[in-house]
Figure (spheres, rainbow, N blue to C red):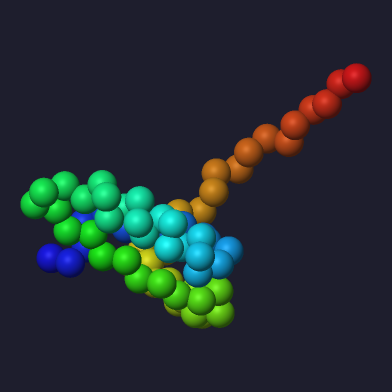
Length: 68
């Protein structure tokens, strides 16, 4: 099993990413494993998501009445 939890963090530059990489490297538990994948904004924007079920229709919500 490669994936148990997935976290993402946007870093504006490679230098910013390097700071976070060093921080994570220093916090890995003795028997832990952390994998870091660096991708560009373009690659992130091209992600395609699939979901196993169609979302349930939203319930009819009454309109809000606003009084001043």
